[in-house]
Length: 319
Image 1 (cartoon, rainbow, N blue to C red):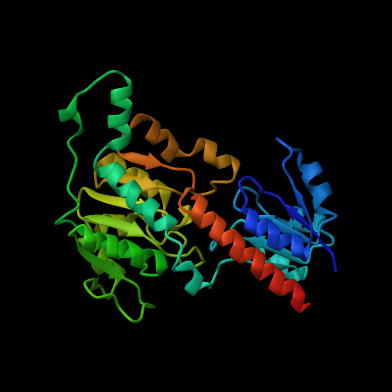
Image 2: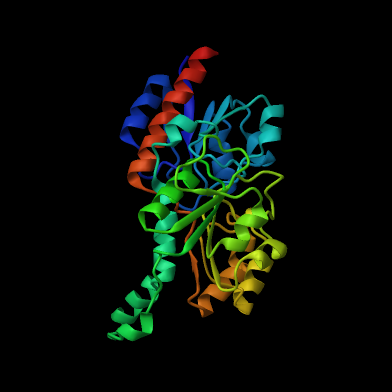
C-alpha cells in the first residue's frame, strides 16, 4: 500500500530518513510559512501518517481532522504535545522514542545541553559575551564558580541523568542521585534513599525525570526549601515538573542563587508569552532560558529521525 505521509515539521529533516519514508509511500512536506489552522487541518485530512516534533499541539481538533490517520510519529520521549488517550480511542497508533532505552543511550544532545547551561550559568558566559559586544573588557565583573569540589544532585538517574553523573565525576564533583527505579547503580555516585535526602545536600540540583501525573510539581516550594541556601537549579526535563511560582519566589529570595531552564510550563501555548519567569529573566542575569533545544542537534535529530522512520516502516508492514 502507498501510504500518504504528512511531515508537519520537515525543516532540516534527515535525507536518510526521507529515503526510508519514500519506501513506505508518498511524503508531503508541509513547508507553507505561517499557515492558517484550516490549511493544515485540510492537508491532514488526506494523510495516513502524521510526523511531528514539538511545535504542534496534537489535540482533539487535529485528531478529528485526521480522518484517515493510522499513525503519528514523534521523535521525542515526552508526549505531552499529543492527546494520547484520544488518539488511542480513535485507533491511531502513536510511535515515539519512549521506552527505546538501548537506542536512546547513544543520543547525547540533552545531557550535553544540560552541562552547557550549567557552565554558562556559573561562569556568566552570556553576560560576559554581551559585555564584550558593548565594547567593554571588564574581567572582574564576571568572576564565576568552580564545579570541582561542589556537590551535584541528580533527580532521576536514567539515560540522561547517567550521562550527567559521569560529567560531574569527570569535573571532580561529588555526585549524588535519587532514583528508586535505578538498577544497577553507577560506581562513584552516592545513592540517596529519599528525594529529601538528595535535596538537602545539592549545591547544584538537576532534574531528569519524565512528565507524568506523579511528577507534576514534583519540585515545589517545600522541595526547593530543602536545598542549601544559594543552590543552583537546572531543568531540561519538562516545565511542569517544577512549580514555577515557587521557583520564582526562590530566585527573588536568594534561596536559589541561579537557575537555567530549557523548558517552561505551557511552552507551546499563549501563556508562554506572559511567563513570569521570562519576565524575571529579562531583568536579571541569574536565570537562563532556552527554547527547549536540549535535543536539537543536527546529529541527534538525524539519528532519531532515521530510527523513527524505520520504526514506522516496521509498524506499517505489520498491518
